[in-house]
Image (cartoon, rainbow, N blue to C red; front, side):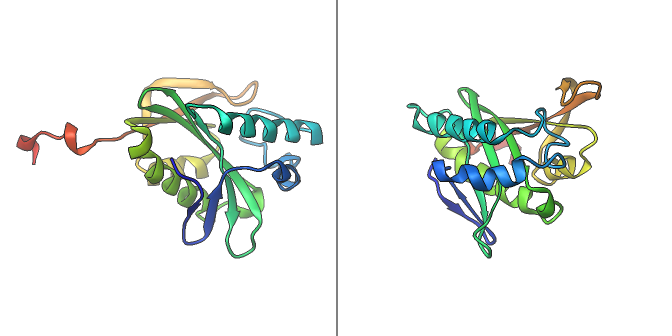
Length: 183
């Protein structure tokens, strides 16, 4: 899948080592981590996250995509995405947007662009995502993008003492899977 990707408001690009500072600005915010499974890291933890993303980008074949989300108007880093191939045609998705940019459609726009660019080159037929049930905005993102809530699967709680995560799935139907009789 080729990166960078440009949308009307965003640039999705591979992470660089210098990005750790921009990521750390929002990554240290407890509000940013409200719906994430980890607590805010220190500088070393953020650097480690960026180094992990860089190492995964060098793997061949590449199985993980961890683009930075930049806002075109400001050039500022507003979040990250993650698309990880788990098996042939199956991936899981994650995204995180800095809190002061929540509820502006950035997650929907970024994920839509990433999935549109990834489907054919990666042969995706299923994409999975887990969401903290308290994160109504993220549930709306999933629904707007066509993900369906799985009623027979639950994920691990995002934080100790919280209810299990909601599991969303998007099943991609390609032209070769559609019967002529169904048309």
